Length: 130
Image 1 (tube, one colour):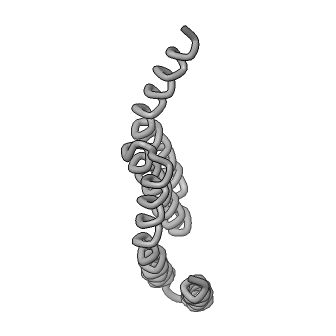
Image 2 (cartoon, helix red, strand yellow; image 1 turned 60 degrees about the vertical axis):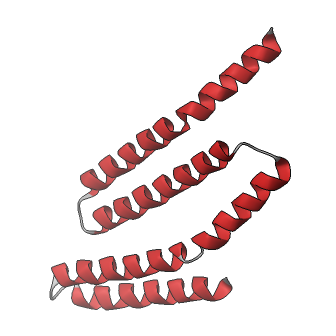
């Protein structure tokens, strides 16, 4: 687990150092280099997804929570990760307006995915209020 963090840090730092050297000469290549490093770092993070899924299954079985809640939580985390990742790339490339729009769409998607859970919570509260 710790080794992948070290790998991600080294990959990121190496890419940034090379990109800083390339930027004055060929700025587009610097962006491509940072994009490639970001994708590589993203795959390092996705490699840990199996461990997370297994842990969530064990939690769901242990406390008898409905599977839909854990699925929703995982979807929300995935949306946040993808939106933040894409936004960061856009902003690094100099397109901060696009990055901000990606963040906004990500937040709206999280709200849309969480809506059924919120409705279920409201229904549960109605039962307790009566």
